Image (cartoon, rainbow over all chains, first blue to last red; front, side):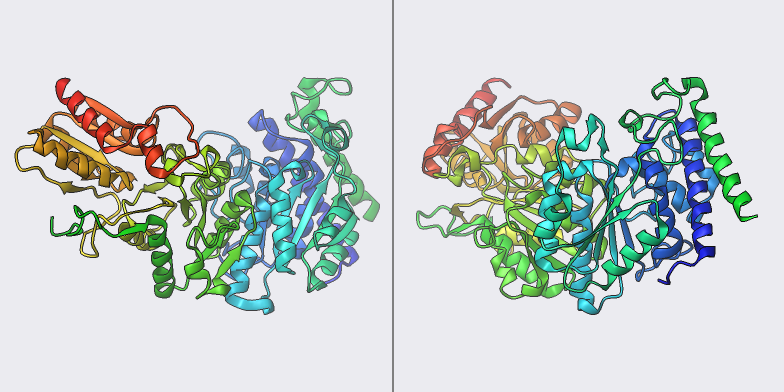
Amino acid sequence: MTTLHEEKIKLLEEKANLIRQSIIEMLIEAKSGHSAGPLGMADVFALFYFHILKHDPKNPSWPERDRLILSNGHICPVLYAAMAHAGYFPVEELKTLRKFGSRLQGHPHREWLPMMETSSGPLGSGLSQAVGMALADRMDNGKATQKFFYCFMGDGELDCGQVWEATMLAGKEKLHNIIGVIDRNNIQIDGFTEDIMPLEPLKEKFESFGWHVLEVDGHNFEALSDAVGQAQAVFEKPSMIIAHTIPGKGVDFMERRFEWHGVPPGQGPEDKVKKAEQGLEALNELRTLCGKIKSEHE
Amino acid sequence: MDTLNPKLFDTDVEQLPIRKGYGDGLLQAGKEDERIVALCADLTGSTMTSTFSKVFPNRFVEMGIGEQSMASVASGMAAMGKIPFLASYAMFSPGRNWEQIRTTICYNDSNVKIAGAHAGVSVGPDGGTHQAVEDIAITRVIPRMTVIVPCDAIEAKKATLAAAKMTGPVYIRLAREATPVITTEATPFAIGKAQQVFTPKETAQVGIIAIGALVYNAIMAARELETEGIYAAVMNLGTVKPIDEEAVVALAKDTGAVVTVEEHQVACGVGSAVAEVLAKHQPAPIEFVGVHDKFGQSGEPNELIEQYGMGVSHIKEAVKKVIARK
C-alpha cells in the first residue's frame, strides 16, 4: 500500500461518488433496502476496493488475497456497488438488487455471489468469522503471513454479545492481521446508539480487550489510509479503526437521520423532500457534487 | 447378528460413553487429514476433544465459554480450507448458537462438524438445564444439515470419521453416561443407512425404530416380547437426516406397525421424521417412545429414563399398543 497522492484522492472521490449514485439507483429500482448506512460507508469502501485491498477482481478466488468480511450485511448495496465498480461483475447488474433470481440478494448470500467472503445479515457474527479465517491462516503460514483480514462492522451490532466473544478471542490470540472497521454513524433502527444502548467509551472498550484502536474521520481518505497503514504496522495486537461517518453522507436530506436507516428513496421522511421526488433529488445532489469537484479542478 | 457385540445380552456387557467414540474418531481423523481442526468452549475434557488437543495443540482453538462465536469462528476456518469439529454440550451447541449454525455454517454451506455432548435426560444429576432433548429437532430442520445419532462409542467413532470424509455441515449427537456397547468394529456404518439389529424368531408383527443408546433398551424389549410370543424387529436408524427412507418404508411394509424410540422430545424428533416418511409412502400406526413435552430434572440416568417413559417396559407397552391398532 502506498501513501495517497492528490491524483489518487481525486480518483477515490470520483469512485465514492459513483458508488453513491449506484446505491441510490439500486434502491430506487429495488423499492426496499437501507439508505443511510451504505451512503455513509461509500468512502471507506472506495478506499479499500481502489487502494487498500490486495485482490484481483478477475480472479476472486486467488488464495493470497486479503479477505474483506462484511458483518453488517444490511449495508450490502455499498458492497455490491464497490465490487461492481472494481470490476467483479457488470455495473448494470446492480439494478437487479433484491429481485427474484438476482445474485444480489437483499442480504448477502455467498452461494449466489461466491466472490464475497461470506453471507451476512443476522448481526454480530462477522468478526468471529474473520478471526476464524485468521486463525486458520496462522496455522498454515505462521505469523509471517502476508494476508490481512478486514472486518467491516456497524456500530449498532456492537450490542450483540457475540462481537465481544470474538473481540476477546482475537485479543487473546494476538491476531495482528485482523483489522476491524466500525462504521461509527451513531444510529441504529430504533434511534441513536447512545439512547438505545450506549457504546461509549468505545475506544477504551476495545483497548481493554487487548486491541490497538484508532479513531478517524471516515470521510477523509488520507486519515483513513494512514489509520489502516498504522494498523497494519502493529504486530502484537489486532486493530480496530473506529471510522466516524455521517449516515446518508452525500445526500443532504438523508444525512444524520436514523429515519433513513432502513428505507429506500421514495419511502423516507417527507419534511424536506416529497416521497415521489426523493430518488431523483438524491441523484441530482450526487451528480452536482460530482460536477463541482470537476469544476474546482478545471 | 455377527455384527453385534456377542456379549450384548450378558449382564457384564462392556459399557462406554458414546462421547469417547467422538474423541477417538476425532484423533484418528486428525491423523489422517491435517485439515482437521478442533474447537471447544471450555469443555475440552468432557466432550473428549482433549484426546485430539493433546496430540495436536496447534490445531486446536480454546474458545472459552463462547458457543456463538465458536460456530462462526469454525465457519471462518472452513472458508480457509480447514475441516473444523466444534464441541460443547448439546444444550449450548446447537442450543445457544442455533442462529450462528444456521447462517454462518449451513447457509454458507460450510464444511463444519458439530458435536453435541451430554444430550438427553441421561445426563442425570446436572438436571434439566443441561439435558438437551430438543437438539435433533433444531438441527434436522436446517437445510443441508446431516444429523447422526450414534448408538454406542464404536458407532460414534465411525460416525466421526464418516463426517470428516463427507463435505458439508454435520451434527453428531453424543451422550454422557457409559452405555452398553451394541456394535463391533465389523458392524457396517454409512451415513444415511439404517441397520436391523434384532430379528425375531418368527415373522415380525411390529418394527421398532430406535436411535442412540436407547437402541439397547429396544433390543431388550424385543427380546423379552419374544418370550411372550410377540415378535418385533429392531432397527438402529443411526442417521436422522438424511433418513433411510427405503429401510423405514420396508420395515413398515413388512410389519404393518411401528414404534419409534428416542431420548428426545417426540415432537419434531426421530418419531416425527419417521412419521413424515410413512405418512407419505407407507401409512402405518405408530407409537412414539420419547420425552412428551416435558423438561428433565436431576436424578440417576436410569431413574430418569424410567420417569420419562423410555424404559424397556415402556417400549414393550408401546409395541402392544401399536399391535392393537393394526
